[in-house]
Image 1 (cartoon, rainbow, N blue to C red):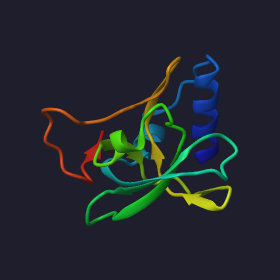
Image 2 (cartoon, rainbow, N blue to C red):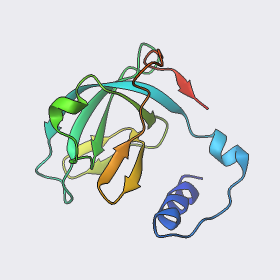
Image 3 (cartoon, rainbow, N blue to C red):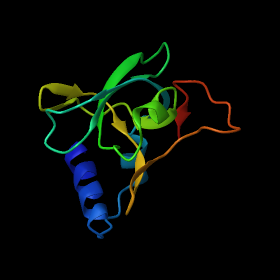
Length: 128
């Protein structure tokens, strides 16, 4: 299933859309998290930050490599984001990325999907 999802996202990014079953989508566990640490990631092949994200008591703190350099580090600290938390960890350079931070791919870079604003969701809230 993971390869299928990766293929789905790759094909979507290049403009092709593949149909998936609702059961495949339901396997993804997306949660609200709060970015608690942002570091430069000079060892990554593509410019990225190393993030630590707190998903609450049930899931805990997870790490992610995210290509979101269109944001300043100060903008990211404390920001609520949405991430997929049940993908297999992936090694990126000398770093293990445990979650996939969700964002919209635009000409100006990745625009994070977030729940900031008037919505009062706590970290770890499941997205469906």
